[in-house]
Image (cartoon, rainbow, N blue to C red; front, side, top):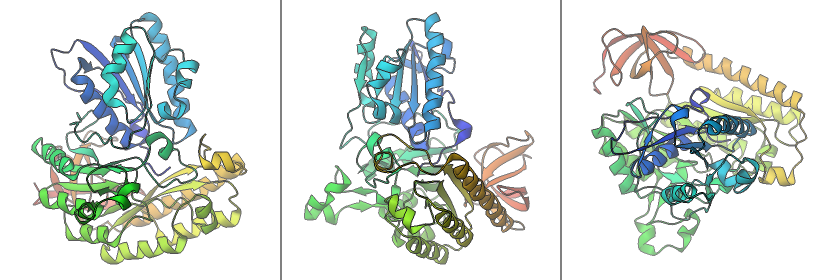
Amino acid sequence: MEKIIDESVQGTPLSIDKNQENKRKLYIESYGCAMNFSDSEIVASILANNGFNTTDILEEADLVLVNTCSIREKAELTVRKRLEKFNAVKKLRPQMKVGVLGCMAERLKTKLLEEEKIVDMVVGPDAYKDLPNLIQEIDEGRNAVNVILSKEETYGDISPVRLQSNGVSAFVSITRGCDNMCTFCVVPFTRGRERSRDPQSILEEVEDLCNKGFKEITLLGQNVDSYLWYGGGLKKDFENASDMQKATAVNFSNLLDMVAIAQPKLRIRFSTSNPQDMTLDVIRVMAKHRNICNYIHLPVQSGSNRILKAMNRLHTREEYFKLIDNIRQIIPECSISQDMISGFPTETEEDHQDTLSLMEKVKYDFGYMYAYSERPGTLAERKMEDDVTEPVKKRRLAEIIAMQREHGHYRTKQHVGKVEEVLIEGASKKSDLQWMGRNTQSTVVVFPKENYKVGDFVNVKINDCTSATLIGEAIGYSDNN
């Protein structure tokens, strides 16, 4: 649940420039969080070097891959419906091969081959380098499976193609896996234990993106604040590292500082943070560098200490408030967003009111809110009864969403009258006459196009707002161009 799901991009077919020497066509769809979309870029890069060009036309594909999410039941149902669609196309194009990648592949493993007769290949998130071998297997008429989770794989040596990119913003993966074992979450089972990527490979990727004209990156991981590089291996094994490895280890605040210094004109974001792992050092590094955006996604999941304990969230309500206070003291204009789950097992009306009171105190800028969805294999599914009825879940979720909308408007109104730097990302969804971009707090800003272009940093005077969008007019370029 701690992964941001952008509903607007779910299932978008991804396509990149063609290599004339490649003769086969790859169609790839992604579902779920930013990490899945980033992984699809890695997959496309690997297959581009093995004879495949991407296509956004399903009916002409030789290989169809769907990169899947297991975070909610809805995502898995969507994938199953897509597999039915692929099956219809495959009847007309029998040579077409279909593979399932990612978290759903890791969770269900060979069941996908047995249940979905259309599937030829099942590939877990740590096995993408094995794709050329697996494709050879299915070319020869055999089903292929690799769902082995790795202790080392970070794909740090793969230069991802930018499939979904607007040419302005890009994701840079810095960790894989998660050690937190929240009772509602499948990520530790589908992506394995936590390991971090060599900081030098991260700096090289960021430099390459800058050279290609990108203006903003998001450092990405299931839990970026627990990034720890000491020469490779699992984070949990750090206690066994040598004295030299411990002395030269790089944590997240170190990495953030290194990236900001190396590329002073580049906007830097990061996601996702975990309250138990975020340190004052990270907040101080954010305050130190103008190019690190004043925005933190800080999932809390519940405002009730009893429910937080049942979720195995290793923070209390009071510790969370202290962290929020520290952020606002060190970075007064920092925006903060949340993840929230309504209807977790045993949640009472009192627990729900604790959540609403927490929201009232923090007044988040925006949030990602869900009704609890029991995920097979998690501790909550194995040990706890899903005992909150659907009508109650939905009513509590509606109250959370209504409060968030109110707080979002409260926050956007604070921008009105100010001049803020905005990075233009593309045309507004509502009008071709307006640009859409984001300020440092990650709030969407729309304004008339005039002579500006995508990728420009523009100073915008904010004249009006809705609960989620700032409306303004450009008054000139910022000094960051």
